[in-house]
Image (cartoon, rainbow, N blue to C red; front, side, top):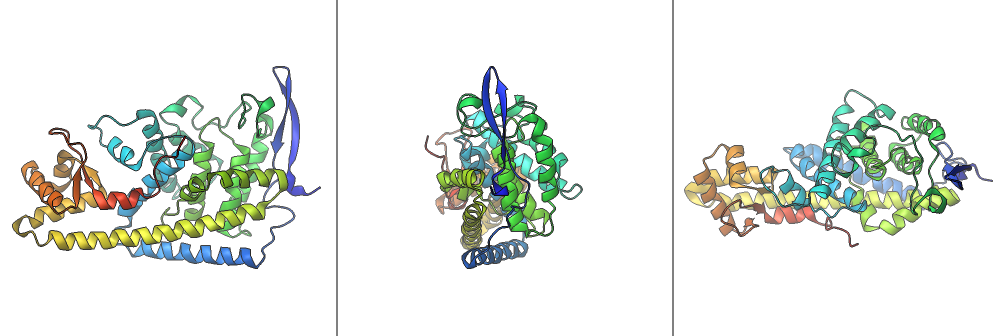
Amino acid sequence: MSKRLGTYVTRTTVGESFRAFIPPDLPPDPPLVFDSAMIGLLEEANRLLGRLDGLAAALPDPQLLLYQYVRKEAVMSSQIEGTQSSLSDLLIHEMDEIPGVPEDDVEEVSCYVRALNFGVQRLASLPLSLRLLREIHAQLLASGRGATKMPGEFRRSQNWLGGSRPGNASFVPPPPENLMDCLGALESFLHDGSTPPLIRAALAHVQFETIHPFLDGNGRLGRLLIALMLVEAKVLQYPLLYLSLHFKSNRSEYYERLSRVRTHGDWEGWLAYFLRGVIHTAGETIDTTRQILALFDRDRARIATVGRLSGTALRLHEHLRARPVTTVALAAASTKVNRTSIVTALAKLTELGIVRELTGNRRNRLFAYDTYLALLSRDTEPLPD
């Protein structure tokens, strides 16, 4: 029997027996087979990651787009888990004075943003490790629906996927008493220098999902792990590769590929799917970033022609690049321009078709940098039930 298939152990709970899966250690044995097609995918994926990293490094302010792309990834990763929040919902939620967005869903997405930012910052002083994963998990479940499910702590009870109990589940991860052995082996593999970084991230994601070490948040943390591994390996300077877009768009195949690794040892099938996702997602990010930069240039050129108001309007545009959904009060505080002048500048940008008022209200009005928000929001619509 192939060593790739792992083993099952039988356990009993409430008088019912079930089988829990214990994965083999990484890397796969027998080793991965890289045929010409797989080599081609890997080369193209690495080439596009290089272009993406180069484009980000060349930006006047990489943090500007990073701020928005982190939020886009948070929305899509959380949607895979069943939330119905949009990017607009999240941006509105981050303005404390504006009520009316779906609180539980958007708080879950907001926690993802904090967790990813926290993880990237902690990598400067702490390598990817079980300790860091626990710290990030604590941020991920700091509030919202998962706050009661042991944030920052590995599970001490059996969990399962599908079904109402382990006995009728579609998949049962390792029992608690086997958990730390599995996690220790995974931690060692995170720094396996003999495996190329992109391949290592692909394999580690599946292994983390299979071990399912927390009571909640495993899917989101497993996807976040990919970006963190690529940043730590210096494949990317900024975490701008967001594979949740690919996983969300191809959700059925995503789950099927994870399952086939466990049932058939089909790491090659998973890896091809993963690399196609890197190619598609990196290409989309490069294309969208270029469109956004071109939009900024076009709009600034149009604003520069509006006469004496152009100075204030350009400062407002600078604010909207960082906060594509805003209020008069936020814009005034950010630009240090008085509210009356901001209202006049917003009216001018609305007249130019750059800004759109979202509420139709006389008070508590929200303004969106419409085309920019549309570019950022591409493919982030909530999944159907």
